[in-house]
Length: 147
Ligand code: NI
Image (cartoon, rainbow, N blue to C red; front, side, top):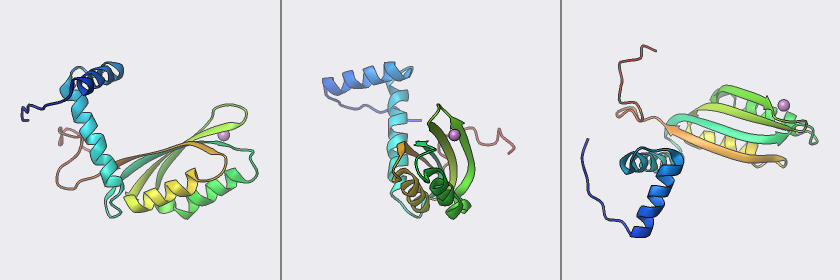
């Protein structure tokens, strides 16, 4: 680990401290490390060849015309990407689905667009977790897990 000194406007430092407090970071370094990781993950999303995992979440109205079956069709069309899907009936009309995907970021983005662009799908969000074969992201304790 390296210690670095950075220069930042007062306003930006205040914003950083507020964000840090809101999200429960213990210090600025921890907050900044996560901000950089998020930026890195976002950048990887644009790299179609990049391999990784992704979490796609969305809310949809299950009785809206044939929306539920169109979503299932999209999932079957991209079955090779699907690791697991969690379905929660959040109220009388709406369902929340969380899909864990694995594969190329370009294909994952395409699948996410297929689902979230459907009429009646709301709160679509894709979180990408790129895998770097050489430096393991977010996992400094390699070797402790046997799986
Ligand atoms: Ni449901």
